[in-house]
Image (cartoon, rainbow, N blue to C red; front, side):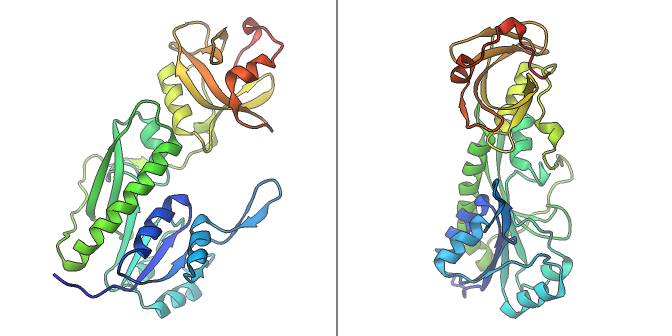
Length: 314
């Protein structure tokens, strides 16, 4: 069945949203403009930096709009003037008000980085890994006024492999979500894609990652700490204290030793081995405060203290 092209407005901000925007712009539907978050200060120099979505859209000559508040009367007027048939939202970073949701004729779509209704909310990638889920995926949904509660249009599943990091899962889901959007949109336009309400069972919420989530508790089992280190790599990174300094832990493997929690019990070829509440971990990659990421073995060679004198987390 043939269909007339829809006028589309895209809303997104971080790297995760860029593949979806790329696929959308390669299709038959015109992208009228891109809404993204205002430029933010980045780095030690706090230089104002445009979002990845803005940078990509600007290179393609697509109009970019950056209202500080999408709920403002000015932002709503800008959106109405574009007369979109559809709004596509991917990790935009602002909640769409009922007034905004009602503007496009065919509603608003969202590409969400989980298998809804599991992990509604802000940090679905990290929460899936922290929980030890066996699979993740992406959901294309119609947006309503709730938090990721709208009816689902399609999903794609992705098995989670041992040792997968938050960064690796982020990148794979970004590409998977873009393909899902590209493949599903024609069926939506022809009426072949039927929205399905989310089930009432299996609902979980992916709360924002907090400083407490980042802090390693060496009293936890080694497997749990490994999930934490993997899930938060590369951002915001799990960290611990050692000798009064903060060290980010980026990669590790399970060890075979035991001992008092937080005590460094050995130095393996890949790096120091630390006892946990159950089992032990061998840290293989880390980042000392103010320094670059490095192999833990290289870092250890510069340390003068003997293993039995070191307590991690203190």
